[in-house]
Amino acid sequence: METKIIMRWGKTVLRTAVGGLFVYAGVLKASDPTAFLKSIENYQILPHAAAVAAAFYLPYLEIFCGTGLALKRLQSGALALLGGLMFVFIVALLAAWVRGLDIDCGCFGSGDGTAHYGLALARDFSILAALCFLAWRSGDPE
Amino acid sequence: MAGFPPLRTVFREAGVLLLAAGLAATVAAVSIPKDRAAPLEEGEIALAAALRHQPPPLWIDARSDADYRNEHVPGALPLNAENWALLVPKVLEAWEPDQTAIVYCSSPGGQASREVAERLRDFKLGSVFVLHGGWKAWKQKS
Image (cartoon, rainbow over all chains, first blue to last red; front, side, top):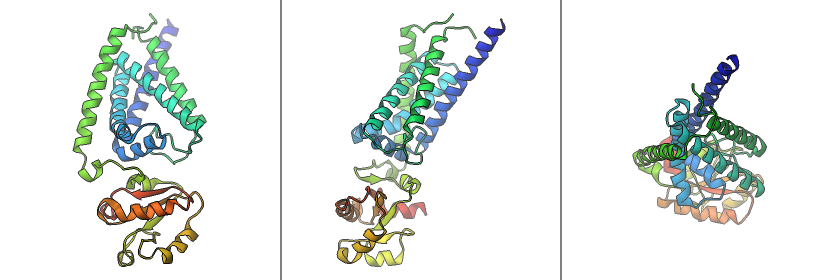
């Protein structure tokens, strides 16, 4: 019984924390789309028009999905989309690392302009693992 | 009961979130001031990103000598096509290896700064950007 209560609380805390993190990241990016656009273009993956669209769209997707996750509304969709986003971010980071680009990841708006690939990847994989866990346990009663 | 939610639920909820984010992004893109809405062109940098750039960039003033004498970005060096041979040695002396240079001017469309940036890139000393919005953007910030 106690284990169940701990698990339930742990899940709620994790869900709120991960959701809040995405809302925070989204708000930072949405507040300065030009800086976020520069971060996207630094990866040298997307053409300019697609990068502009992503600079406006991704922050709001993060905000809505993060809010949905934290408030347990549209949770399944939010988990799937955030999982997809994390996968894309990880692939983009790896691609930049392999090409030796010295760029800020742009994960939380514009940073210090320096690449810390190991840390960024460790963080992204941790978030992805948390999302997978939450998706797996999403059928549990709360 | 642990387990992943049904796919139909995931798709329906994801669709709602994607649509909501699209609407919010559209509203954000339409409602920002026109001078900020103009997308960055290749080789341009937004003022916000330029101000946050680390290490500090080398500012290059591509306006006329008279305009430069009247007022300029603190620390900026003058460099224009008219007095290129006279002014460029001082710029090359101040330009640290791998330091980013940011060129601005007051001509419509940033033509003067584009020309100066193009010539500076030939030195291959570091990245060279044109300030998005030029001198006007800087003055609006002040």
